[in-house]
Image (cartoon, rainbow, N blue to C red; front, side, top):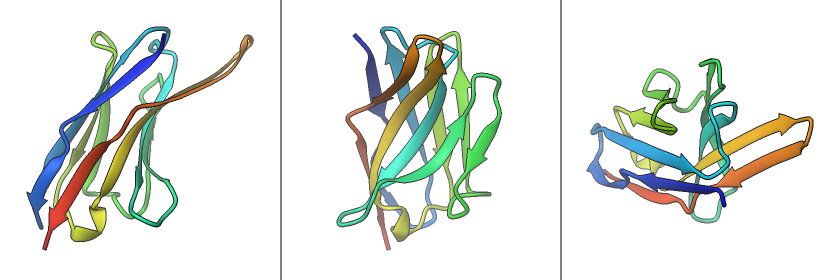
Amino acid sequence: QVQLVESGGGLVQHGGSLRLSCAASGSVSNAYTMGWYRQAPGKQRDLVATITSGGTTNYADSVKGRSTISRDNAKNTVYLQMNSLKPEDTAVYYCNARRIALTGRYNYWGQGTQVTVSS
């Protein structure tokens, strides 16, 4: 059974920093592209950042320059370091693992962790 467990969310002041972690277990391996998405109240879930198995990263324009995604393959964990946080970064942040293989497409989500940035 696949599990993605996020941690590190919380309340932070405008301009502060947070580091989110997502620990993957089960059949999720280093071959998966890992990512972070976020969903604010009343809005759709949007991409924040992704990192491929080879380490290639991609960021939403809204967080580019302020956030860094990384992965520790030995720990099967992905991180999102967020700096210079703004109130508009307030959302539930979800970890995602996806892979396209000969056996099919795989896409998994964590339960989410709340990030609240006060003004």
